[in-house]
Length: 303
Image 1: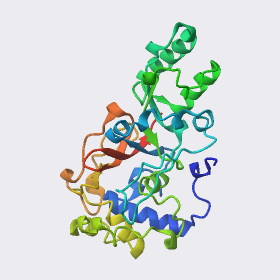
Image 2 (image 1 turned 180 degrees about the horizontal axis):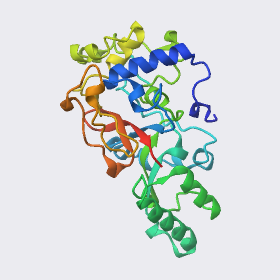
Image 3 (image 1 turned 30 degrees about the horizontal axis):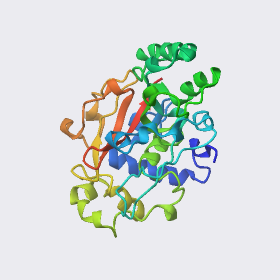
Image 4 (image 1 turned 90 degrees about the horizontal axis):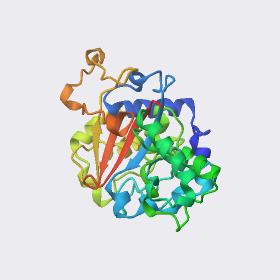
């Protein structure tokens, strides 16, 4: 399977894109226009990332599927199967598909044998260069693949030290606009029309966890199926998928101090001011899953 999902779905009409953008504006507490142009791209790029303890506990952060040549080169997607947006059994259960080339890896070349000294040196140089950039020492999968290919190294080989690479943030396959990233983070990439919106949590055991406040956040969404579906992503106290909102930042990544311009004038305490710069990029929104076992984060990609 090629990475066709790395571009906006061709079946998404202008009208449906506007409906989605308005709906996500309700979730974020402000219009997507405040993050850029009409749909929040404005020349900036965004991505949705999956990370957290579950990757390590399920030993998925060292699964060779992430470092196959074709996956790192962006020629095929990665679908581990165990990575879901909501717990197994939920009506809204969505298997995530990933772009390994744009995922992020920690790399430790120190344990490589002397026969791979040149490979180790190139890896160390790439890590050092990354230290001063957005990802603070982590490497994009595409860069990791290029270095491995240059030295003829199969990163999936069992002969290499297990800790040579560790998946840190798995990039959910999507286009680069904020709307694309938000759709990817909420399992709506394939919902190119109202009829394709998943059923939501209405008939599942988790429906009771979607409280009144969550439904109020999306009360302004006109489409009923989309409104019901996104309500499950608006529960700040959920043990399944808790919403953490962030105020928008300016072009330099600083917090936007002009909240009074928003007609609803959200209080400062409604937003998390921690931009998590140590983890790279400006955070737009995050969902904490299974009581902090995993995180789905939408970030502005600044490098």
